[in-house]
Image (cartoon, rainbow, N blue to C red; front, side, top):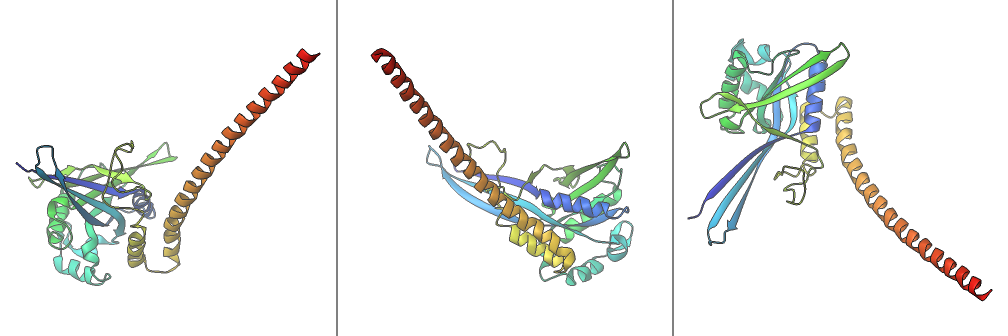
Length: 279
């Protein structure tokens, strides 16, 4: 009997976490915003030894960016626990076209707070996940990321975060979200030890991520440095690959030279021995 298998994976890029944490610290007040990303699905058919045609569906949801919403309660709420859907629609209409289809979750930041959803978080998540259910991502896959940071000995800042999603019982539960670099290749081969795979090629998504940043921050000077970071990231990866190849080639050349030196030394020793025997 054929079987259908389903694998769901959440991933977030390291620059996304870095920029979000930086934005949260740029102002001492609590922060709320949206998580921007995309969903990719890959379906594979595998024939087993018993000639069964099994279907494997691998779904990856990747967080590419965050969109801070200043004065969240004033802009989108009617009271501290209720989102005004009319205000939310008006807010989304002012964003670039189809922007709402890229919203896959939301985040909130509180300094020195517990990484546990409060009553307001649960209420907001229920309302937001229902609103975006038919628009971008289903309710049970809509993410909440809670950020905080602790000041250790008045010197070191320690950032923390936990992702949540709704379980079948409509309760928020922690969910594992893999942190990946932009150089991560899709469907890592089995002989590697990276420990994860994704059907989203994050290098190819640099452009889509940059486009998202452009939509959110515009194309002014404030945005240029952010784009340069990603361009530099790709360039550095390319240069590192060249350096690795160069080092490997140099090591091979060094091995050849050492062998040549050893052969010459043996020839010299033989000539010395031959001259001794003649004398």
